Length: 196
Image (cartoon, rainbow, N blue to C red):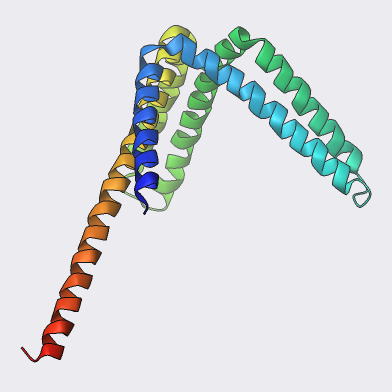
């Protein structure tokens, strides 16, 4: 790996760590940024879908639905990007809904594991109940849920940054070992050729 690539990767990792700390310290701004980013991503997806329609509408008999889907994605993206405060509130409730429904789903499926004789089914059931309770708490305390989302996002971004920096040090260490091994082989060949 080139030195410039290593420096860029380390700088990228440090930037991610700083961004993670900012996410954890600024939950409201994090949710607003996520809302704006979601809007931009929806617009991009819609433009991509419309681009696909432009190229494929002659070959697909039901291409009109593809165009309509792309136009709706663009419209939704514009609505989300313009109404970031409402979207930020919605993200908290969306997280709560997925936690609640996912928890119920896990708890119900734990009984399938029990039927098959899996002894740890109760752990799966407990995790499902905890996730469902978390979902209910997020509905009851949306501000705490917003902080939790920001902390989870911040921690994951920090871990990604640490991983990038660790990879650079790991690669450097591996390169040194390979270089040392090559030098040892060269020395051994030189000793053989010189008759030592």
